[in-house]
Image (cartoon, rainbow, N blue to C red; front, side):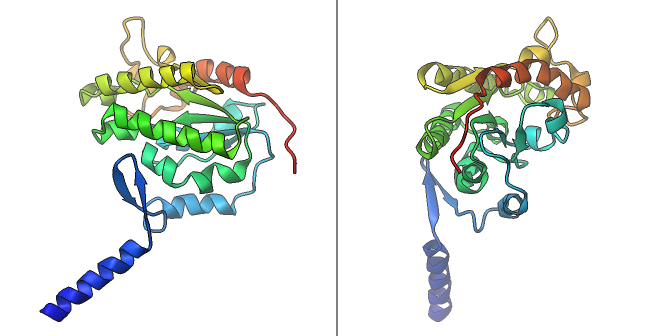
Length: 236
């Protein structure tokens, strides 16, 4: 029994030695063991975008946007969102997702899954700031556009609108205090005059947009992208 216990402890020690990342008070497993590793690894096999373009990052709302390149044309858009991700995962995979793309504008849609997972909005904002710090360390000239979390039917049903609004207010505040960081609220395009969700813009889960939902979001998102993207020559 003692030998078995010792072997288990040794095995655990070996796994720990592979490394963990400490993010905002949470110890999370490294990218090598994370469930998103396979999806993110596929990005490395894609053709690298031309330097100086626009990068979409975040969770499934962007990942499921299969017509993003068409909807946002002629803007030079590359989509590197991966489904189900939270702000901690964007931190974890920063080097694989952001660094290789040599972008000039990053459009961020993340935090929705944090709220769904009952994370404190303050934690979401702390991790978002850590991610922004990584961006500025990589290249201070990169602009970041934070997109509001959707006040969707699923969030209303689950009683999570308060958390969504808290994160969105925090994103807006980040845009005020940080140079090169901007905010766009796309919810007016997805709600009626009473501030209620237009359910016809969502698929059955009440969380993800349908084709028309994306078209409506674009009416507010694309002008903001055009405003903040500064085409710039990038050294090879």
